[in-house]
Image (cartoon, rainbow, N blue to C red; front, side):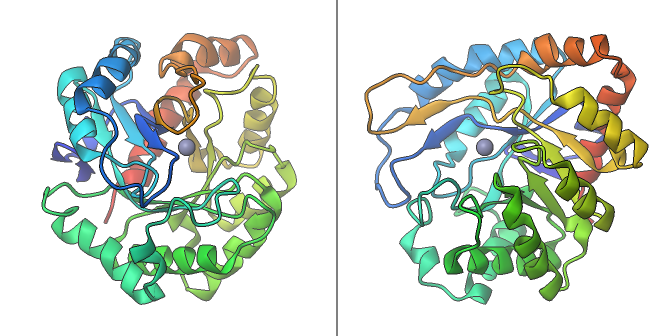
Length: 310
Ligand SMILES: [Zn+2]
């Protein structure tokens, strides 16, 4: 079974799945207090784009926004009901970019590693707060400044321990490939099997040396900048290389698209449509010689495998 915001579904019902999208993201900070928007305004803004993706064949969206970055289950439930898409939510913590703890609630910062692991484990076993909704995976973000800071090490160790207890996989955002070796060292120290770890944004710098090195150890490789790149030139050669190295079974796709932004600046940020994958990326890859069947397999079979919790 796989947990969605409307309850567990059988893995056969997952279908075509985009592994990394956002519906609502709050960059003001984890401890901002009350909602500054209404559920209705987010749904009204995002729904047409969700429906557009569904009409292009998408069946499931893995929503990649943990607590502190704006995870809003009321919004996700409404979006899932109204669009007919499965939506998978997460537990975890986000410390990407240069935010230095801004998006992690103080309550989490004060805890020990095991206390954090227990909170995340409890969300999986009993549901988030009193909603009964369970996360499908653990989302983290760290290492964007070329090193792993103490708070980031703490959340990574907590995620490893929660993963060992629950079977949930860790989707770990790391833009700067030079931080990957340190992250993997921590995973090894925690004795977490490599296949429990997904390198989110492995395509950010497309550092093939590190992609192959750590892919061969057994981690999952997620190409998920597809929604924001100018063009897709870097993808076909990388996919071909993974094919040569028999690493396709560990490849995942997402776009990092969306979203409704909650922020202080007035300037509007454009919506990145969820359908781009189907409308632009797939045709481009096919034109460049990548078989459509292969892409289909990645977004169905690989996604299903990585989201199934044993
Ligand atoms: Zn993201």
